Length: 194
Image (tube, rainbow, N blue to C red; front, side):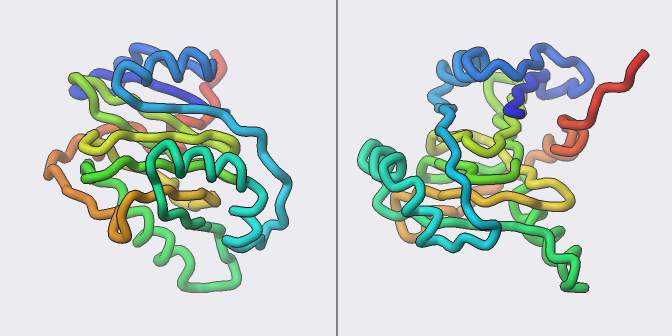
């Protein structure tokens, strides 16, 4: 389920908007230059590699690459490995790299092939938490303050689009805002029944 939750930056408990309506989410994000669109998903083997993933989405990847322009494209996969005793520590280290508010000098463009993750966009005194799931393409313009939560048990495969070889260089803001916002798990947890 794709989800948007909007909160004041200084009051995470005050939910201004919560919706799973893709058109409404896209309309809320568009004034900030953020693009959210849905692609039809293609069934792939759980261990599909970069070549298979890119081939399955070739026409969409070509279109987005040309629009960017984003000449560099790759695939990143995070899948729990219960057989690896180091997996929890590896997962936490990977998650920690993205949890602090930062910006990039180029657009951050991701298509979720499988799994989920949450982009938190700090815009005009509000935080827009966007949970992306399989089929979602999210494009965050260069210079947008944001962070990303892949959850405590990361599970996703995403196609990433870059303008430059060193495209994912973060400029951390030093703002501790991310610590006061709900995590991915908290956002998608079922609401308690009364």
